[in-house]
Image (cartoon, rainbow, N blue to C red; front, side, top):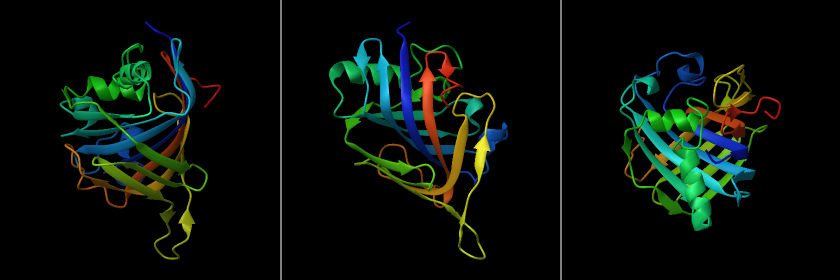
Length: 213
């Protein structure tokens, strides 16, 4: 197993209500799980291959809860990546070179037998975890815009976080409201003003690095 390590941040938008039942081991709000995820690597490596500054993304869709499987998944890797970097990122996102159940990428891949062709495209991605704002674009695949959850009476920004002890995704995540527009092979028609998640990434082959998160 090739050792790897990644530090960066993530923006996710799924079709569930704010809070996302998956975070609490409950079934999806509307029965299905449909999400667009974007990741930025501040610093990282896969063996001797440096991954600093690269972006990656994925679109996933399950007909029921994730743990029931039968999902579809498409990976998108930063076109700036060299051939070695592309191979490394694809392995990480497919759950390879990773201990069983150690990362969300491992879980998503294991639960998605229907894997679409990996794309290599420009990925535009900015996010501010504290402000709960973000914008990611993968041309001809998806665009996600995220903003703070708004108080329905005053319109003021509403701040809620999830503090997770254990798990395979994050230590602390900020909640937001996101909308995805898709134009690729996996359509997400229901992601309009739904759950958005902002969190840091601190992972190795063995999973989350608690002291860094």
